[in-house]
Length: 417
Image (cartoon, rainbow, N blue to C red; front, side):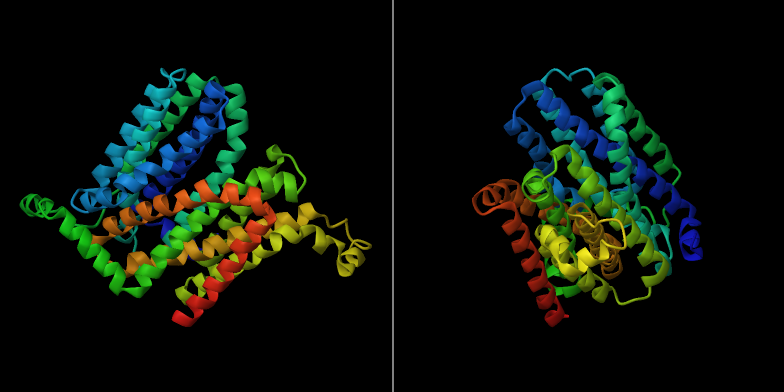
């Protein structure tokens, strides 16, 4: 393993946070799969499943910014422990209400409200646990944990959902989060505990502080761009998830069940690879240029996705097929999904690092809380509109439009920076 990465992991408190993040992400992804399955089994209704998805996003819109403002006043380690333990008990409670749709929705909603307090306490802690020269490596490792957990959860979800009864699945997920709280308990942040009197006075000015944060974002172009691009990268994932069934059947001509293997797995692998490349070889490169490269690669990959069959039919590909195993649409899609994942990491890792470098501790929680709200608000658009638009003009046309938009955005960013 790269020596630089080992040095980042030698920061003991960061290592504990990182291990906790891995188990948090795996349990969260498994919970999302599990919840959607339970809701569908109870109702056999796509509308009911959509409501379950909204239970993930609505809390971010309602509470993201406010939660971030409060977290900046509280001991972040305590916030992480309390929200993790409460989520664990919610999952254990869920085990006893799996046949009650209202309780399933309610538990999911409260679970995701707690997530809104967890997020602005977690990422802002990274600069408090590692030295500045290790910051981009720490964010790359965090990206590795987030993206790698998608692969792990995807691999585990099938066997777990097949071999475990829903009751025991919910209990297992709760135990995983209790395990996370133990690792968080070992963390020793380097910041000083806030003065209780100061905290009490500041609580009276919570909305003023939110306005100050918005002012900071509007006046600091690097912070604003990083926030916007982090939100965009998440919305891109949600958009692809929305059109995935149509893309699988209409463009790839494969079953919806095969789509994760053809697209999601290579995209997650690309994200993991990109995070490792940044930590190992690109950590000293200009972060804005890395982000710009990621935006252009994302746009190009999206633009080419619907043309897999045409690429395979080209003469040079047919000539290659005479000497190597046949290149099919499956291979083209697998490759483009991998590149799309790698491009996503080129945006995620540097943008997170910029947010942490360019903001002080007193603003970081509010910044990440605002990011959650932004993602929640903007994600409503693909959830509500993209599916219908794909029905009208076709999935391929929607994906091409997204690709062109990303390339245009890349040129705008090139001009701005």
